[in-house]
Length: 288
Image (cartoon, rainbow, N blue to C red; front, top):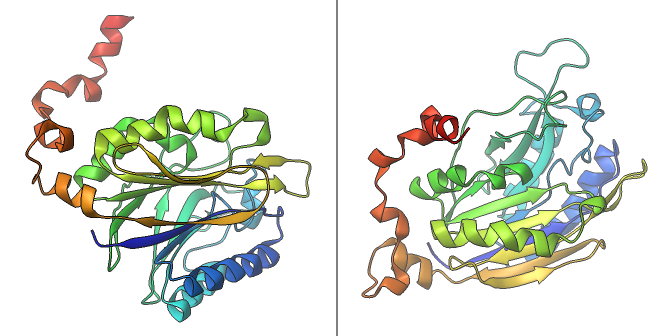
């Protein structure tokens, strides 16, 4: 990993106002590029705004109009853009077909990749399709992956992404204000994901009202590979948090150059032969 500057936007999106939301994103992308940012991340489903029962109305194919708009911005501003949208399945289908919760990855060369949320909350399952892949994306300065909101509660996913080479895990959220303080909650488990897997974790959330009666609590947080907070911004007001990620610590650990246990890469000492019960579920059956 090389020195990498990232930006996280706790963004206010209006439900269904796709063009307005995209124009706002364009403002932040250009601002971030002017600040020397390499990667900018927006929240979960920020393009149409998060809605369980309405997202199908605003679902788009990838490639599609929004993805092309963001790809052009990424190329023209030489920046990697991560943006959440509702993705229409490739097969097309009838009106009301369930979409994916997708985080678009638009790269500076104009290409577009994507991550589809793999773990859906109980209230999301009737309205969305889960993804089935855990990709890692490459930029000139770092390798990164994406876990969306509920995904972060499954530590196996973070471990797999780290083992596949991810140095940063971006964590876009759409958490409503009713769930309470994001900082207190995130520090319970995002710090563990960072520490156990030797990755930077960078989270952001939707903020403010969506114009349809729903409110999101905002929040942006960056953790280093030891689980320490290196940048934060909390509140329900829209803003952009910029953070510089120093690669020295993660490179020392990942290359196993450490001479003491303090900077050991834990995952290098794994014993996968003991973990079969994670796949079979036998441990849970015995516990029951």
